[in-house]
Amino acid sequence: MRCTGWQNGCVHSIWFSLPDSRVASLGLGKVQYYSSGNGKDGSPKSAPGDASRTEKRSGAAKVSSASTVRAVLKKREYGAKYTQNNFITAVRAMNEFCLKPSDLEQLRKIRRRSPHDDTEAFTVFLRSDVEAKALDVWGSPEALARERNLRKEVEREYEESRFLGFHPLNIFIYGQIKGKRTTFLQGPGKVVMVAICINGLNFFFKLLAWVYTGSASMFSEAIHSLADTCNQALLALGISQSVRNPDAVHPYGFSNMRYIASLISGVGIFMMGAGLSWYHGIMGLLHPEPIESLLWAYCILAGSLVSEGATLLVAINEIKKSAHQQRVSFYEYVMQSRDPSTNVVLLEDAAAVLGVIMAAGCMGLTSLTGNPYYDSLGSLGVGTLLGTVSAFLIYTNTEALLGRSIQAERVQKLTEILENDPAVRAIHDVKATDMGLSKVRFKAEVDFDGRVVTRSYLEKQDIDQILSDIQQVKTPEELENFMLKHGENIIDTLGAEVDRLEKELKQRNPEVRHVDLEIL
Image (tube, rainbow, N blue to C red):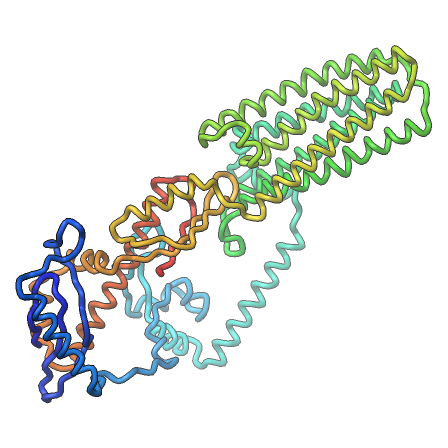
């Protein structure tokens, strides 16, 4: 092999001399490379006489390019048989080929870079070996296909039995028994459980007051408390489901269950709370009835104001704490629905406090004037308040479920981490999606610097051995084997660089749970 005029920062043409006197022009043309001797402006330094040598070689390149260049290596056709060299994991070998762990013990084992964060390497098998072992175990492809169909049928029956035995209460209790009790002893779970207890008691006493007085405003308040209790029970179910571990059907987990529960809660408030309050208020205007003594109603409303206010303070403190941890303001935390369960409790209790004040004021006007229309107007006002809250909850949770992006500042921060890495030239098509519960999924297309990746590979190699291997290359077949060996290793190095960047993003930004970097 001969390389003419090899100097720093120059433009060269490269020829390999072959033993059969044929000259194959590999990479014929201009090849630019840069070394550590570059100038300050990043351009390569020119050696004396480079200009004249460059002109001569350019002329030689033009003459050579005018002649026909014969390809040394023929284009290889890759058929289905070539894919038998693909690797397959033990889990796939057992699932797809119906093998046992003991069947895999005698097969050739290959250690490969692991795609998982918790392990550096794992064992794989050649697909051809696995297929041969499966035929040896089952005797024929037909017998293997029958076994696959049988296992699929058993799996289908199992899934059907699970579906028929499904019940939300069982799931809720199951979550409690399996070590998730702490979910309701702190954070949003604690807020929701406190709200359920208080709103349940408020509903009971308000219902008694309505039966005793017949007040439309008191009826609206009783319905309001019942709607809050039912919705918060639904939130508790959503919290219990959201902490479930990912499975094969839901690989990204169940964190969106809180948003789904909050969305259903918002619809429930609108239909049950606002609807019944408007209905009762309209009926009161159309068919007014005299109201009995409101003394007990005032007492119950006062107690409800205290209890609802206490729950509201618990929700406010929890949101302040979470907003401080995520470094956002209280307003941003609520408007972006960072924690839908706590948001629902906050808004419901805020509406409850305002509703109690509104109901008490309208009932007071009715007592002073003896006009029952004020009481009916109070019922309409409470219904309107509930409708506003439900509309806000439906909007914010729908936005969250649609997969909204995180703030531009956070996206810029994640992008800068990648762009400041020496192995990265550019970042394109960046997408950072909020998955809920402070979990972010980050995706980007990365243009890697092949020189840095190659240097990373060479730093781990014996350079003297590589030089010796290069000097022994005499034929196209030897050149091909040399390039295939190191080319595959460089691809593995590129994969390791991707893993390193993904791991660094997750370590420096704990909220980033899933990173998908695509090589451009």
